[in-house]
Image 1 (spheres, rainbow, N blue to C red):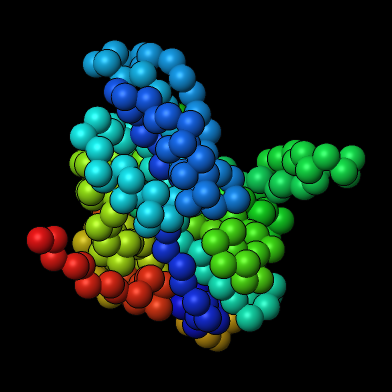
Image 2: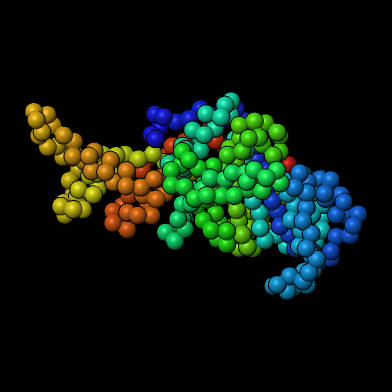
Length: 304
């Protein structure tokens, strides 16, 4: 898919925290837990009363699902909160299922992460209901994005990872035809790297600026890509296009090389994994503006 086949822009973009995991030194009492359940999304909260494995006096782990501002305010007013996992989320809403599915394919082919290890392969899977009426789901690995409902670019234990998956509706607004994009920060270091060093930072988090720096969309100059590989194979530094006569016409060999390399992988991220040690692939990449995919910019309120 190229920029010419870019999907329709979303009709709405909703930014929120899908999950926030915190540890408390002073466990929340039943009244506080009831308050938090009331001010979280459908998933509510998960409570784990046990000492933290890393010590430091933390005695209770809470997972807050889609916490509202009131729940984040409750955390911000405490002085014993440690945040060591967050899921920073965007829900894209489209007019139709076709537009939503095309957006998922566009992200798969064009979205990259700046620091992404070759040891973290792209994982595509199809999730389906088991049909027994109990709401259980099973996942099957697939190899084409057109067949996938979910895309991962890291393992569950990775410090940073993203996932994109199709949803029938947004879990925060109920709007139909939703594409769910999630950045998962695991561990204290990763959470702080996302700009969250305290519960106050959760309350004042700038989703627009976070995604502006991390939602990287790129296109590929096929001819430039082919020239890079031709120069490497021939040990040359040519800047002109190579042509070869064939049946009375001139064949663009750089474009042919470029298509062959591009078609050997499924996405630009996989292209970087496979070949960036051979040539300077950045020379063949062209940025695509992410402005239509960012949440609204909200001016921070100065704290008194």
